Image (cartoon, rainbow, N blue to C red; front, side):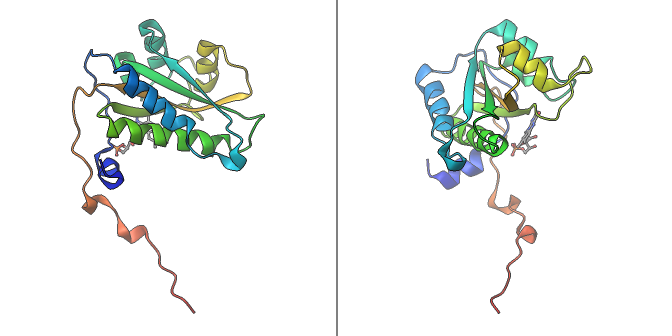
Length: 175
Ligand SMILES: Cc1cc2nc3c(=O)[nH]c(=O)nc-3n(C[C@H](O)[C@H](O)[C@H](O)COP(=O)(O)O)c2cc1C
């Protein structure tokens, strides 16, 4: 698919079939995250791929809202940025998540970003700490978000070029 068409097609998919994601598609999605650019090429991101149903259910319950899709997805990728390696772990992790979403869209795999950084947990603590506990990661590993992945149970309408809000574009004329 043309990159432009992938950008239009990429939507947040929160409903999935029970089908597994074909192994080669999952690998390509993760590869896209691994190949995403990072500041100074420091590559601070670690990718935790979770397919275990009980663990996915635990992940889905961490936030009081906005994480329910993790219960039914086929796999989730927790992106953890090593803050000791790079002070740009937020940017680097976000780009990796976005690359994986675009690759997923191109391969017909549904995906949805689940925000973790700055979010509270259902138990009143922080969501990041709960996710780190589940994957046994150290405190230096900062977690921007989790990508839920699965074969789409519904296909939201692709974006239309008309959705691009050009009023947000400010052209500075040459002097
Ligand atoms: C930084 C970021 C955080 C997000 N967090 C969540 C989330 O926690 N739960 C959720 O269901 N969707 C989440 N989303 C998905 C957005 O709600 C979604 O991208 C937005 O509504 C636009 O819809 P679209 O992705 O279909 O274009 C997040 C997206 C981004 C970029």
